[in-house]
Structures are given as structure tokens and as C-alpha cells.
Image (tube, rainbow, N blue to C red):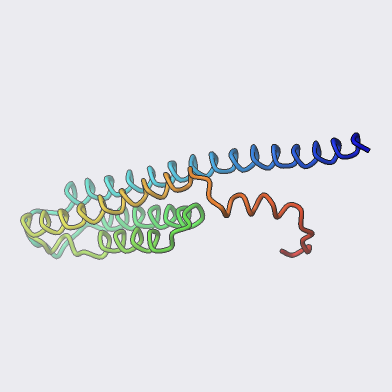
Length: 166
């Protein structure tokens, strides 16, 4: 009889050990993915900022070459694709909304109509907001590293029978 009890305890212990290592591996992959996506977002912000200062004059102008407009539109599209990736890896909807809002601000501002002083002021506001968002990204990554009660309850859910479409 004791052999059966030891066997059952061994199966349960093995299940938990396997669940724990799987959960740790999943959390590590999640952290890696978040770092990649957040790094790409920050890099794209810097590229857009550099593009703005390199291609828009320091005095208001109506005529911007089609190539500059096309390149800026392409940067915007690339950024939107990164935001889609961020939505997949980030549980905080407010964070991804704020990332998108910042991107829209950078794209929708009529940089070619601003003086250099006005552009600098607007860019400083954007930079302040971006640094606050980056701090929240860092916290999101740190949060992913912690084990919470929901992680353990998810591991225990392996004992329940679930339907095909759940």
C-alpha cells in the first residue's frame, strides 16, 4: 500500500516540478520577447527623432519632397508594426495605448511648419513622455519576472479537465 502512495506522491511531485520548469521557461521567453520589442520601439523613436531633425528645415516651409514624406510614412508604418508586437507581449493595455499615442504625436506633428525653437520644445515634451513610458516598460519587464498567485493557480489548473475550445 505504501508503494502506491509513494507512486501517487511521485506523480504529483513530478507534475509540479515539470509545471514549475515550464512556467519558468515561459516567463523567461516572455521577458526576452518584451526586451526585444521594447528595445525596437525605443530604437524607432530615436530614428524618427533623428529623421525629423535631419529632414525638416529650421523654419516653416510648405514644400517637402515626396521622398521625405514617403520615408517618414514608412517609419510610421514600421512603428505601427512594432506596436502590434508590443500588444501581443504586454499585458498592460494602457502602456500600449500610451506608446501608440506617443507615436501618433511624433507622426502627426507638422514638423515642417515649426521653427527650430518650437520643434525643440515639442520634442522635449515628447522625450519627457517617452522616458516615462520607458520606465513603465522596465516595470512591465520586472513584473514578468515575479511569480504570482495566478502562476501557481495556472499550474494547478493542469489537474482540471478542460474543453476542446478553451
